[in-house]
Length: 449
Image (cartoon, rainbow, N blue to C red):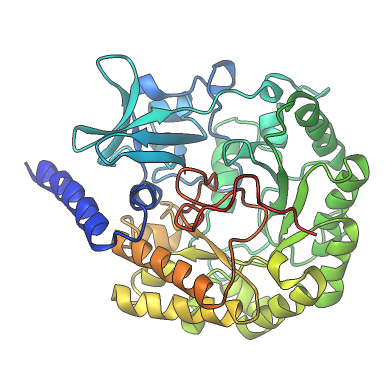
């Protein structure tokens, strides 16, 4: 009875927010709720791993799950899909791509109906048709050493982005250095414990071979960008510092495949000379993620980044990097929702939005357009343990409203390298910021210069 009352309130909350914020697309309201709280999967909706017809979840950097692998049951043995696409239903949803975050306790369930077709159910009612990503041809081929393309170079965002996590752990280590919302190190450990292939440092030769397979079989050219990323490097890997470590992959990719993909790198906020090295290697978009705007929360939630670089220096370096890449091509991410994480976060949605809006105004006033990932409270992280429900849905909806308004105030548009904006067109799957922006002209997204 208690569970029934809770789930009934969920539908009421979602519809209340749709009514209160009509300027935010309905698709974005549902997508944010799925990202912040996860979705459950009936066994009829699981992917079949790499032997099936559905592209499986690759765990490309973080777990993005609300339970550990041993707690996921069937979803740990028979992987869920990488993403789902929602359409139709009583809300008339336009095509909406959502990254899969598994939560067996979620009121949202993906399952087959009586007609055998998959649907998304909330409180027992079917609210959308569900499409699954087809297994791409390039996933059906292996490298010469037997490794799968999915392990070395998975694609996300419905095939738009090749995600190259070339360093699977982070040198910010332990409670005094790890970011308090991040499970990159635990995700590495849980996959190794489960006996899954999960390469710590990916040799550049393997990356190039995987990209050759993708390039050969992606005849529709669905993949249009790659991201080089991984954990922070505070010393060296193989004698290379952070800029040279990530940069030498970009150099090799651009030499082998000149102009094939838009090259992006996620790294710390590095000194201008190091950022120039990224650009010289062929990277065209730089993501020096600022994580959370509030000074006190940055110091508490990102202790390693505060210790090694510091918040003020981090922000200075972001602005300096705009002189190298151009402001439009510097796109720092923040983790939307950790502003409200107990016990240190803001206690009201209004305060949290005001703080984050201050950060948006700061960067956008310099022509830099941040983007955000919707916080998933992974259970092995300090903030996830203390806040299993994440941030309130209203926070996420108001953030979408504030983000779009701030962008318009400064006369800026959606950042490059994320596919098309607009409800029904966006493919960026780990937040709804692209779904909530105005649609551009078809095929109008420019490549980064």
